[in-house]
Image (cartoon, rainbow over all chains, first blue to last red; front, side):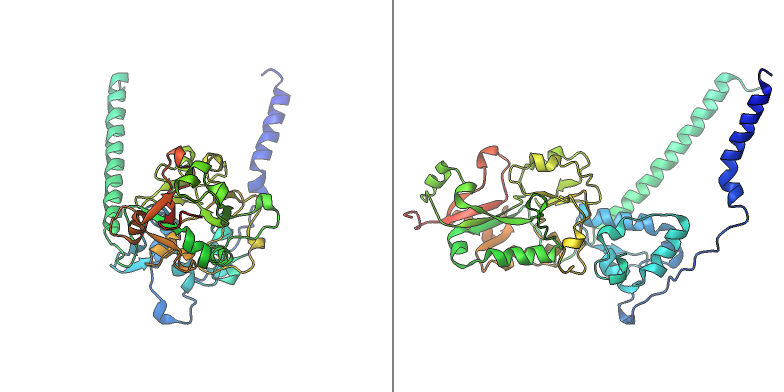
Length: 132
Length: 265
């Protein structure tokens, strides 16, 4: 091979660079996030779960996006959940009323998975700890 | 060995099946969202076209603009930014003479009047802001309200350039530090978005009138302009009505009423 020494050396350097993040983090896997999906309100009568925990875990982002469009753009106010109850579509009034501890409920998983949210730039005005 | 022709035929068939599946699943989501839409809130105010009527004489006598502005700005978490160039306003005052041309003032028989009128987003019938918005962040609802979807606003400010009424404000800085006391349950805004009066849509869904109407001591009326029996429609025919920059043809939804019998000022 023409200039094989240099080519091989650069291939080695390239592979090293590309694999550096994996090598550096080898064996340092972080622990699973500690989250709390329980309801944190003192008034148990207000509690109305939107959907099952499994569904909310996997699809809350899609649901919230649908709510956003329905409320802002389509002028609807109530979400009809799969068990037929009408729930007002509001992050501030519905979700955060029961799940008041944003750090345990939202941040723990989102920081673990590196998902940055813009929600709190504007929402969360009724729970003081929602603002960073 | 598979021939080129067979390969193309097979991949075409697979592709079509795939597309079919996607289309079908799309349909089912659509029908689901239509079903949710059927649930109507009975208490919410509805209209063919919402509009405001400012009874100018009554407003001059009995309304306090500072009260109107304070309730509006407080409820909607509007910041108080000291620099005028960066200030956010949903409602402001403008001189009678600045609002209407001389011909219009002659038309209502009041060439000059010592009053500052409340001006806000006119929720036009043909809103220029909606036409120019590149992301459809501002849009017109079926009930005539020109709404903002802050999630979609990219801060290009085309709408501000297009609006003939200076009804829009841009958040040059993060507004939160400038809000005296944040009103719970109403979102704040972030820097880089445009905002304006929304006719209190969040109150209309609860069957309540806009705050400026409530705080005006009966001098600002609100209702359905399309319904001839509504309070606003009745008020409009009881006198002479002006709208700001009528000649532009955007058909503002905020009307200024001059009742008969006051045209000798």
